Length: 208
Image (tube, rainbow, N blue to C red; front, side, top):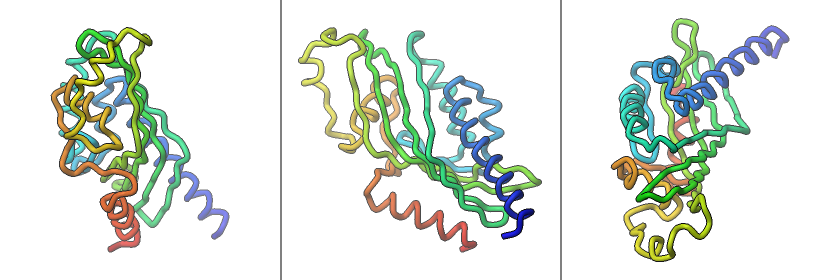
């Protein structure tokens, strides 16, 4: 690869990473208009509670955040990105940790969710935007914000049976606090859908 080609590749990767990281910051801060600019109008997104058009997801997220308790908060932290380029297409996969504070039934809880994100990027009219985003979930946890405040009976009475074991607290929180059950398209690390997601990304990058 020539020096010029390397510079172009570095610029492309920098723009792709900027868009990917900005999308999570905008989601956390509620900057919905800027978040829309990170996705193509026909972009698609699959997360734990939604699978469909990315712009529809953004509107649903706006409505969801508007119903949260005033003390609730969330932050996405991304790292270890890997970008593969092929002309006007790119695949960007990276790790993502979500930290959330939620008030449920008068109790405050802290949630963590670990996942990987597979972003398919496409350059149109000179700009890189996400064409498809799939979250691949690995594990989660749930802790009382104030140790000893939540009675043991609260946890014993939680019905986690409808949810994937790897993501049971995350899904329970979504349905309990926002009324969103897990989508049938949810992707769990180590499962067949996770393999299919990465294989489909590889084929798409190659032009299939």
